[in-house]
Length: 130
Image (tube, rainbow, N blue to C red; front, side, top):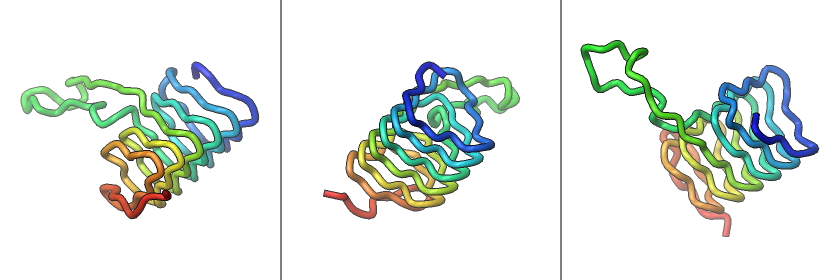
């Protein structure tokens, strides 16, 4: 982890799978999460069993003559904006803006704008908070 500010709560069973992770102040990360390469801004709440992947391009798969495991991929740093709440069992593969709500069980495959409430698989805009 490259940065972890004060007063964070990181619960049991959470795994940090990449070294380039930044955690802001007063962040809560629930139990059994898998946190990839990301920046989680201040006052975020991450529910249980959330997976924040290192982007959508971690695995290449276009070459049918090469095993997927050997095709490589690209890891990108995902940003979770301040005061965002990510519901239990969500999968985050793209950036999430500030003051957003991600419904439980959502799969975020595209960037989420500030103040958005999204849910579903793939996650879709439900409404704006403003």
